[in-house]
Amino acid sequence: MGDNNKKSLGFASRIQWGSIITPIIGILLGLLVGAIFIWSQGVNPFVAYYYLLEGSILSWASLSGSLVKTVPLALTGLAVLFSYKSEIFNVGAEGQLYLGAIGATIIGINFPGLPMVLHIGLAIAFAGILGAAFAFIPGYLKAYKGINEIVVTMLMNYVALYFLSMIVQGPLKEPDSFFPRSLPMVPSATLPKMFGSHLHVGVLLVIALAVFLAWFFKRTTTGFKMVAAGYNPNALHYAGVNVKYLLTKVMVVSGFIAGTAGAIEIMGVHGRLIENFSVGIGYDAIAVALLANLNPIGTLLSAFFFGALKTGANSMQISTGIPVSFVYMVQAMVILFVVASNEMPRIIKIINKRRLVKKNG
Image (cartoon, rainbow, N blue to C red; front, side, top):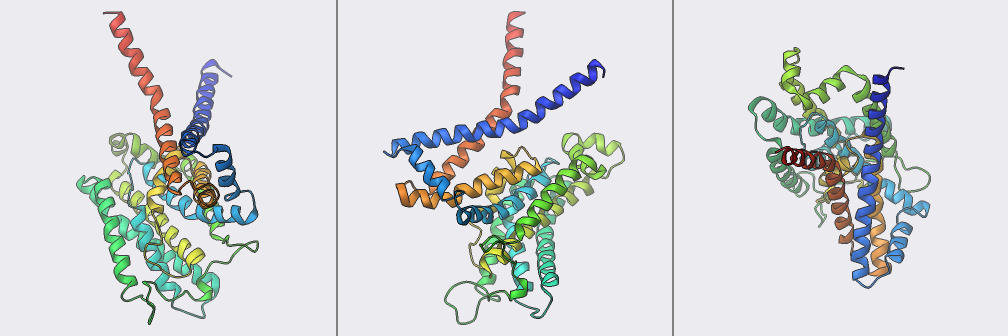
């Protein structure tokens, strides 16, 4: 093996280790800051974190609860990751998730008598199509009109939120019910549970999708084009690729994935459409994807970390009085440290460059 190949492998190894170690350091620093906050409240941090673990992973009941919360976070995280690989920042996963939930509900409360596999597949597919159609608008505006996709997707989240509120209090509202909610889904449209717990089969779909995307981005020409479009769209254009069409398609697929997340959450957890059921899943997905350094398999792990934090927060609050909002502070600190860690090599490079310029006059 030549020296150049050895150097290349060594560099690749450093990149892979860096992508693993950086999130771990970010998590540890985030938990350390959280411990200081807990200590300032007069509570032993070790005791608080024990109850956090007890409520999230130390029993099958708590672990399955964490996995249930992991599923929508991972799916929407994969949706954000999919678009961000091409440098398109899809902040609209929350709205696309809402559209998917509406689509799944429309199919799920109708067509009784369909075989379960067909009914579930139809509901998920329709949810994905609605999510994709909703994402097409910012994707088209970004690719063909140059309009900032962050602003458009953020505003469209409000459109989806109020549309869901309108529809769940209007056409889809359960008759004679005081609450803004739809009829329950028919049994053939609800996801089967696993191992005698609340864990549903949606977790298998998430794992399969993450594995597929890991293969897709590394082994397929389309995946390579997507990543290349993010690095240098002009070069891709001169290579004969229709970059505008490609970017629009990327956003549409991202919306499809986010839409399926809404379907899985309704069909696997709630059993019916409920107003404000998401509580920010689509926004948390951005943090999930960033913590995973846009790695599909890493997205599963970071989603589980956030899911476990959310599940264990209630146990910690009941036992120690630390508020649930503490979890959001830890999440924010973790992302802050991870982003800062990713930027450190560039900052050090700039400092060294300035030092050399100053030294050489």
